[in-house]
Length: 468
Image (cartoon, rainbow, N blue to C red; front, side, top):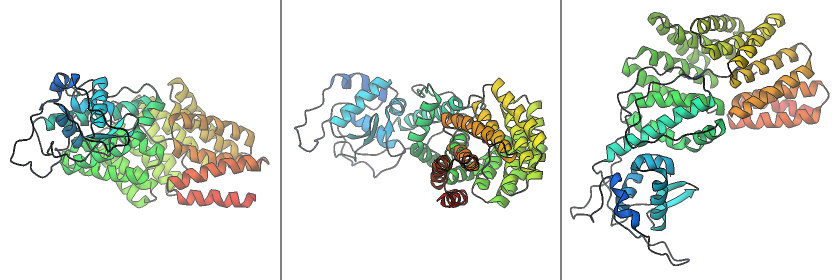
């Protein structure tokens, strides 16, 4: 059975890096000894000469023929340094240290001139090097890359907190001058940005790892963990925390190590590697106890409980969920306490204690509502649905699951959505609504397959076959 309560908020990543470290500029064959045509060498200078230039016309149906104006070569050169398959206008604005409107105009002109191509609305990719603009490192590359890395890191952190405002602030260094992180006005916009920039964020992390930029690796993992969990990207979650774990130990930072072991354990458990998960989580608990950190210790207990459930150890899971709830209460981390209370209620349900299960789940739901925590409400409603189902109250279960699903869809939590659909189908089948059961089970099976949750998909598909 899928776990009902949502993953915990990303824990504080703890110590700030001195700067937003960034990948070193991409290398290429050295430029020819003959001097290239003169171009501006700093992005800020693009606002003068290039502002009045007009691209050459391109005859209809004729191949695009490059046309250059002063400044185009430097813009194209910096775009070539960006990681990922393409770049959006706001990220390009930080890379070039210009405003968003100016960046859009520059990218449109380079596209008209054959130096770039548009891959999607608002996204661009530079074309290969033309002879007039030889590749190679130039002055200002490192500063441009720091601005771009800061753009992605700050925007990812902002996106995570737009979706889950209770998540703790990360101690990130301020953006460098010229870096303008993107403002995301709604959870839906934040989810869309994280999905759209997924490939670039992955490339940025990998490049930072190769360049030994440990805080960048760690902070990106902390920013993206919740999104990977919501979307069921378990393999990606495992890879990023393997990198972040090495970075945390190299940094010698205790809280970073606790966080990395905790989420490496969570990812291993989601992948079905329970002994590996338990080893990570037990180490996280030991480090937290040694350093006297109740908050990190509570998170370690919380995910340890989830992992023990996945391993079929519900009694042990209940013990650790109750420990986590008490520690969160002491730390006044109310949303996290709601998650832990709900987890305890879930385990009481699985262990057959309906009275205690309802008590803890209702406490979790009340706490989540008081603190405006939709993720906690979704989890508690899902747990109350399971409790109603286990006690034969299938109409109450249907009501609870539908309410949970509404929250899951608002939050983009497809991982939890699949489990709620799965259980909702059971209540539909139990109340003589096979058509409704078929619809929600088909949806659950599709998500399970997409997230490589093959055992859960097979279980649903067996029930679908039994309906026929």
